[in-house]
Length: 185
Image (cartoon, rainbow, N blue to C red; front, side, top):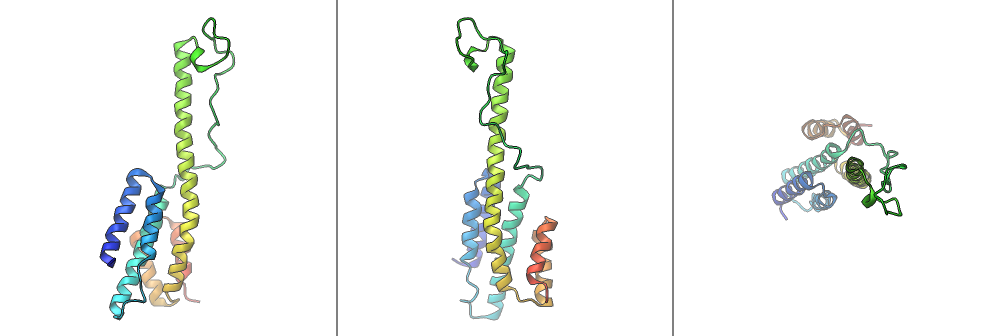
């Protein structure tokens, strides 16, 4: 696949992730990026263009991950395993077991249903954020490995990296980390 086609396909995968939240789109984008061959190109300018494109795509992917992370996410704030009927809730006559179907008061039942719905949404967000962070811990080292191996530790590399970071990375912690990969010794 040509570099231009790969760029287009990766962009489509990142857009699909932004729309659906499907983490497989990020994983597929990373796999496409890794397939870009730098050494197979004969011309220096083409090699440099391929290297720059691959760097740009990795940075876009990492920025997409960072943008999807909820800064308020607390892994210790887990959703409830299940929502139970609050103790003392009046039950319909003849209902022997405390169950949602047996709640006598329509307002109490509405509150219970809202609590169930809120917990389901919290569970979905929790899983999504947890899985996103796990994927980040998988993909960041892959991007780092490429950046560290493809970009020599020179002032020119640092300049190129700073320009790419300015163009694609919004998270300052991520930007600082990426700069260390090409900082001259």
